[in-house]
Image 1 (cartoon, rainbow, N blue to C red):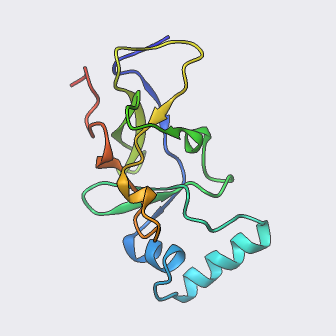
Image 2 (tube, helix red, strand yellow; image 1 turned 120 degrees about the vertical axis):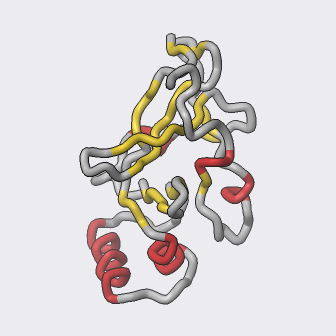
Image 3 (cartoon, rainbow, N blue to C red; image 1 turned 60 degrees about the horizontal axis):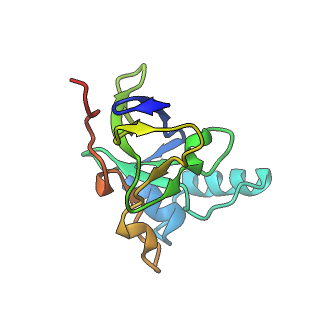
Length: 145
């Protein structure tokens, strides 16, 4: 069983700026590097749906976890309006922030589904908003300083 405050892992993927996210997933102006990124995905058969993007941090960074070469199992955590997981911010080896999942309920038993609240932007029919880390849960780890 997992208990309140246990960390499960990071939401791994490519870190994008808001400009890159807009260009690559929402019809914004594509630069040469965006075109190269798109061609790389097409060659490797990686979709470009925007279904695995997660916004986090004060600087508006976004993690794109759609590419299996740079993502992890946490991209498959399902939505629930009453989730058992929230997000925390961790620093990588270079001191850059990235999001990770933490237990926000007293206990998650073996066999329980792991869930996170994607927030209202995910369900927007226009799909113009990434899932936001502020949607549910705290950016601080519960029960830890």
